[in-house]
Image: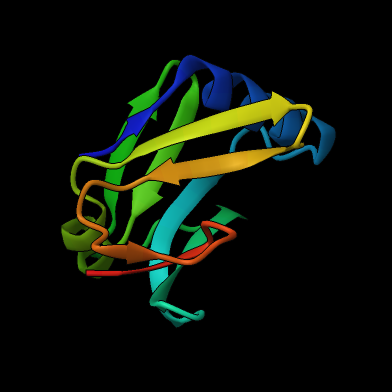
Length: 107
């Protein structure tokens, strides 16, 4: 299971409302690539497929495919809006190496 902070939930809710996708899911996952081996995936998705695990944070529905769950166990998804920029941040305790931008990781 992953943790989605209240700040991230609020930003996700805002984005989904702006996109008229309030009934959709947020898909969190990983895919091969990036400078460290894996890249995080964060998208709006209208379809839950077989094997997806569903998590609910208030009214935000998050789905994660079964392959990604293993690599994301214990991860915290947060949102930052500091002076150095804004965006979603993955704090993944399974990552043994990350790139400078934080978008890719190795295990």
